[in-house]
Figure 1 (spheres, one colour):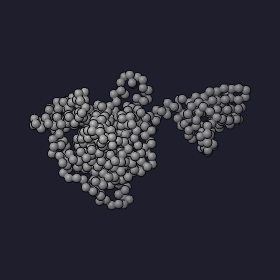
Figure 2 (cartoon, one colour):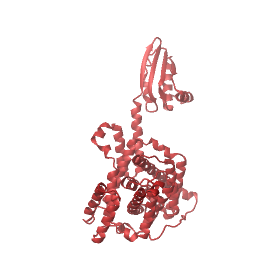
Figure 3 (cartoon, one colour):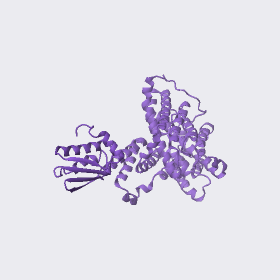
Figure 4 (tube, one colour):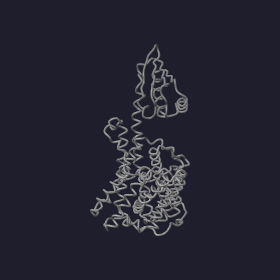
Length: 483
C-alpha cells in the first residue's frame, strides 16, 4: 500500500477502483438486505464496516468483503423467526467461530480442494452473477436494453483506446448523465430501497445471554462461519492466481471473523469476500493493494449518506452492464473449449460439471463446492483402487506375491481375491515393499488373507512394509475382530 501512496499513477488506479466497487456494492447490498429480511441500511452499513475492517485485518490485499447473498440466505431464518437482535447475535457468534476455526488451521484444508472444483466454482459464480442481472432486464422500459448495450460497448472498447480511467466508471457516469439530461425513465438505484441518512452507530443486541439463546443461534452461526470462510478462501486463492502473488490464508480467515464481529457491533448483517466486486477491483480496475478495499468502504458510506440523492439517480442498466462484463471475465472459457474437453480426463470434467450444476441449482457456493469435493474424492478413490496389482511367482516350496499400489478401503477389498489359496505350496511370502498400508481396512484384508491360508496349514510371511505401514499393521493386526 505504501507504494501506491508514493506513486500518483498507482494511487489513481486504487482510488478509481475503490469508487467503481463502491458504486457496484450499493445495489448488491440492498438486494442482499431484502434476502435477509432486513432494512437496506443494514446491508449497506455491513458492506462499509466489512470492507474497512478487512482492509486492515485481512490476509489478501485488494480483495473485497461486504454483505453477501450466501450469508444472507443462511441467516434469513433467524430474522424471520426471532427478529433483528437475534440476527445480530448470530453474526457476532459467527464471527467468533470464524476466528476459532482460523486458529485451528481451517485455511490449510484448502489444499484438499482440487483444481476442477476451483474451475467449477469460478464458472458457477460467473453464471450466478449473470443470472442475478436478468431480473433487471425483464419487464422494464425499452430504453434499458440500448443503455445496457452501450454500457457493455464502453467497458469493452474504452480500454483499447485509454486506460487512464476505469471503463466501468466511465460507463456509469455517462449513462447516468444521459438518463438525467434526457429525462429517460428507467429503473435506478433509488428504486432498490431507501438509502441511509446517518452514520452507523454502536449496537449491542438485546437478547438473553443464556443457553437457550445459544441453542437458537448456534446452528445458523456455524453455517454462516463455514460458508463465509469457504467463499473467502476460494476467492483469495482465485486472486492469488490472477495476480501471481501469495496471501496469508490463516490471517484472511481470522480477519473475516474479526470483521464480522466489528460489523455485528455496528448493526450490520455480516458478510464475506465478494467474488464479483473483487473481480471488478482486481481484474477490471487493476487494483492490487488494501487501499482500494479501504476506499471502497469509505466511498460507499460517503456516497449513500452524503450523496444519496445523486447515487439514487444511477440507472440500473449501467450497473447491469458492469456486472455482465464481470461475469464474462470471470468465466473460465478455456475450460469448455472442445480441445480442452478432449484432453481433460472425464472424471475431471465430471467434477467441474457437478460443482457448477449444484451451485447454480442451490444458489449456494458452499454446497456446490462441497459436492464437487465429494465427487472428486469418490472418483479418485475408484481410480486409485484399480491401480493395485499383484504378481505371483512359485519357486520350490514357496509362493511369492509382490503387491504394488496404495492399499486403502477402496483397493484392499479386491486384494483378498488375488491369491491362489488352493494352489499355493506350504509357504507364502507377501512382499509389500512396492505398496503402502493406509488404513484399518487394508490391515483387515491382510488378516483375512493370512487366516484363509492358515486354515489350509499354509505359513504366511509379510515382508517389505515401510515404517508407517509396519507400525499400523503391528498395532491393528489381529485386533479387528472376525475376518
